[in-house]
Length: 122
Image 1 (cartoon, rainbow, N blue to C red):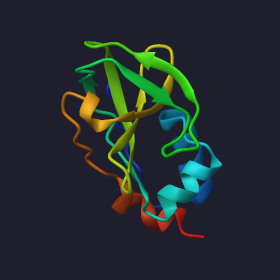
Image 2: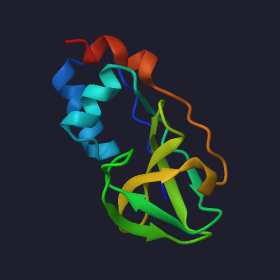
Image 3: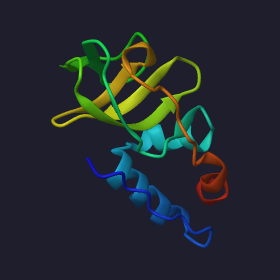
Image 4: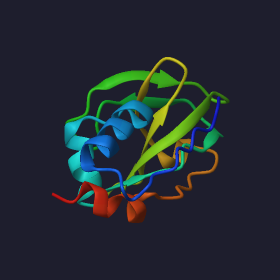
């Protein structure tokens, strides 16, 4: 899996940053709002592996719907981290969704939030 790290120039307007988050992070409107509020951290799309089979959820917390599962050894990209829960939004081969960090080989997120905060300000 390619590690796509587009350079975010501070001159981008909010709509460009939103487009970028939608395209590279599969972020929806609610997730983008939570990124702006710094509840979700934008990760560097680091490639890592699943260390034990895990469910993939549509959203963090009790209201998420199980979308699929990822198997031990499967490679994923870390997209977002929920700062309230120990969960990451990952991109696997055929699904993207939220997985517990305990199922991820190296659950570390280099965050872009500081760079994006001014561009996402309302």
